[in-house]
Length: 184
Length: 210
Image (tube, rainbow over the protein chains, first blue to last red):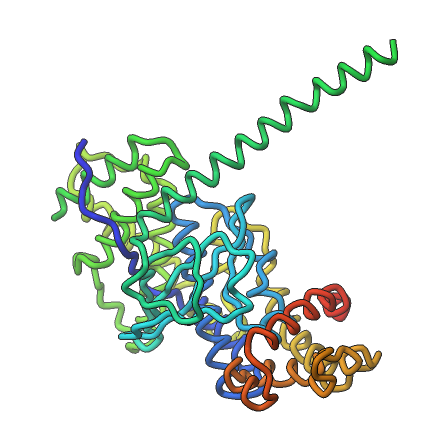
């Protein structure tokens, strides 16, 4: 079967429940600036989680700093743990933004970065694209790779994870046998 | 258009769960459905804002369901959008309406939000209940520094700059640029110091929630 369409972005409504959670988290903050940051970060993370849930990529929101109250208050993070693979940073951007802002605290220990355009008024969001690495605080949106590349990248990471797992399994019994031999 | 959506559904079905080709086809399928303007908009006779809430909830649950049940799509039984719209009206709008209208008086997020997400073991209701208190604990801890360790955590090159000072600015949402200007320390020095100390205090902060 021929491939249909190109796949660059992903658009969908933001669920009301995700909106309410984001509001709840943001209402507890001390200033309007911090509230806005927490609100958008939460929406971006839950939107990416929803997308990954759709396509069957397992995430672990509980292990993500973006759900940890201390980290929410003390840093500007929007991370989402992908099971066995590492953290994806889900940076919110507003409509017509030319740059994606990545604070220094979100520039390490990440397997990749996604830009999530949030339109809270219309209640919808769009994943604009992805990058494996960033080396600047403000990344031009037009330097993002199509979302399609994220899927191939996740696939390669999953393969790497499975192989390293197999390698461990393959080496463990051998060692055990050697031990037994020595003992005998 | 509908034919193309049908092709995408078949393409997704053809590949096993977890394969990139399947994920790719599902991504394009869901994205195309939302951009198609072919989703039903039944008149439920409700106020616009309530209708909108129900619609969004229903659509998101529908798309999750579709992705995990795409193998149930049978192209011999007709057009894919007819199938999708039937599911939407007969099941997902109704479920969303029940969950949203039934809980209109409660402040917390509908349990369906947590329930409908596949493969999670996250206790959303409890998380919400505790989060307000936890935010307050963090704030109080940073402000009062009961063990004195946040004040003692000073920058070597500039002892006036302590972890506590930066943390208080961070919880107020100040940007690195603002903090850097106020404390006259370059951003990389500042954020490196802060990040290292924050990692050190991670367990201490966690213990606030036990």
